[in-house]
Length: 248
Image (cartoon, rainbow, N blue to C red; front, top):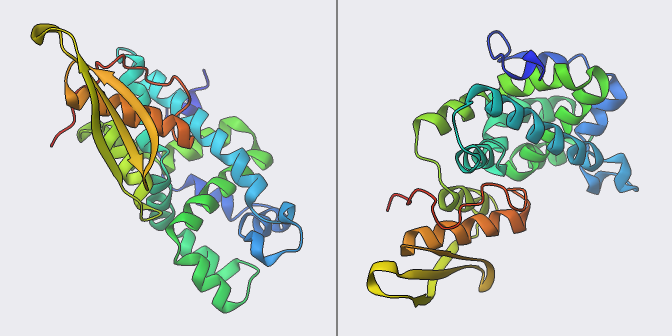
């Protein structure tokens, strides 16, 4: 394990420092929306794909080293929150990626303004920039930069309750969607009751889970929905219905 993934001191501004030192063609690509180019491969999408994986591995490695006594489920919930689309958008704003888009993106003024105002796009661009940093300086440097840039998200997740239901809602809020939970089954004697819940998004069942309480079954349904949406790796944070109950 590289120590770069466990150190945050002095690394808070490293990501943007490296971004400003990127080769001009790579920086331009990382700031280019697919609608601005004839071939989508000339946009930030490929770099975003790469950066998403670099971000996930960097955060996972950091959490693994930082919390040696935490179980997989707790680490998975924290990771899902830290790398969520909403977190990426918040980090983008905090780092000034919106201003970078307005000043250096290759589109016209109207296009740049529209891109800079979109939380989803900013989150995508952060991942693209991470991918570009990885391509230029390798994983150890990219990991250190990521850990520094997302340190506030990690601290927030450590000091505030983070669960699958809230993470799912944060993920859906970016696209103005909401999750609806419904109880679809219960079985067993009163002292060993098992509940089954589904989570629906725009009327579509996206996850189904079981648990000893209704809240725990909803937690498992939310976890499965996060895996389905690609926010959480399939099987990550498997709870077996024993996830800590959500607040409210």
